[in-house]
Amino acid sequence: MRDKVMHFEILVEDLSGKKALDILIPRIIDMNAGHTFRVHSYKGSGHLPRDLQSVSDPSKRILLERLPKLIQGYDKTFSALLGSV
Image (cartoon, rainbow, N blue to C red; front, side, top):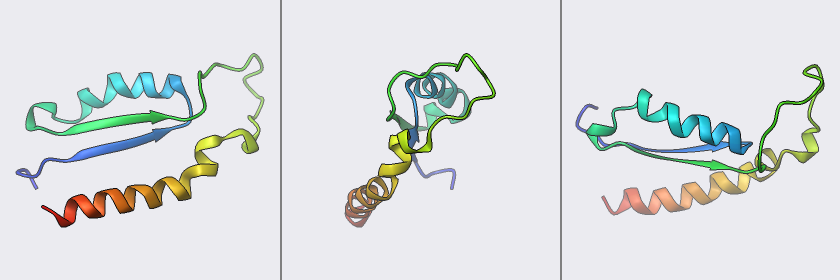
């Protein structure tokens, strides 16, 4: 699999996660080999809660709610791309 170039689509809940992954991913994958990635954030700007024991409301997690539709979209997009390769 060394000769294969890969593209990674990464979905995260918040902007702070996106910023962190934009820095970390190039250190993890070999960008010189032609690999690419794109990080998508869905919730907005992240923050640390004042009470670190608090739990966020699951109903406000946009990514989790939209995940089935996003996966279907990726399936259609990348199936078409892979079919033409």
